Length: 502
Image (cartoon, rainbow, N blue to C red):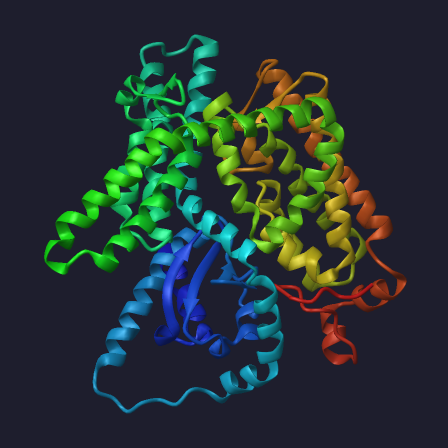
């Protein structure tokens, strides 16, 4: 039954993105179906947003359809299967069907806006960050699973339960993290246009135990030195060396010479340069993060918690994954994630305030009711694209709530009570099983839980009292049936690109 429902959702989406012939790639992250499209003018965006299961859209380097956690992982394979089936059907001799007029009309109406937005977002820095995100996003499921297993294992050890099982759980939880550099190298080469397995082979040098016998910069190397940053740099270097080799190596010996030179040259540079440099950078990241929260905790939390929602809105929050991963490798947990998670708390408080203020707008209230469970679990996109961002002011007040929660957690870090997460991915309530710190689990959980409450409360109060102008309340606080018959409908909610002006 669930499979047929997911297939029906996929079948509803496919024609609205221009059909199978318009789809060039299909992937997904935690909440979004990410599509490569040949011609974005063929997308019927208004109809797509109107689908009940679509929480929003993001027109970016890939066309992203927000479906929500869990759901997107089930819909994506159904969507891929439908694309394959439709392409096979189109390959059979048949009279060509013309494109619908709606696509042409959409192209005429939206071409200017889309071109302007694309040009604005296609800066070298943003494109680089998205590439980094594309390397690490596929690793998130393993990071989550291993992190939760590590948390369960830690709890069992503290309670002195199942002593015969805990070593096995430790091995399961730690195996992926011990070899994460290899996976990063593989994905990096793939993202930068090289041979993935060569990127993985070069990155594997970093975690090889034998590097302990090698001396560089006057000191012995240690396995894992440089971590994911070293693996990323090594794989990028390998990709450029491979491309350079392809230009001049004769085809007859390319299969022998190119991979050999790629691994040899990039491997030597990695051992006698990158491992040391990346190790110093990784150490610097850990030192900087600890110094920031130890000395400016409340202010740092205020800034980080307040700015995280805009990063999520732009899809750039994934670029922080290498920093989180580096901290977990060094310290066993990342102190930044619990602070950033407060942004989701501000968003939840904001949504509840909107629900209370707009008592007569059934459409918005229905959206909030459907998106709040995901919000409590730390998935912010449904509430961002479905509620706060289209309304304008509430998005700002949600950021205020996140800033307050971040400042709260940051303050306790400043006085010596560190709150960290043993893995990345989950947030909100879902982060509780992954919490760790320097003052015991009870203290860590209490600080994090109290931070969430602060975020909820401040987000609610800021939105309730400052999130709406009088004009907005007049226009929005009406029944959807009334707006259908009236003159001035409320702003569309699901994935609206331009916020309503206050």
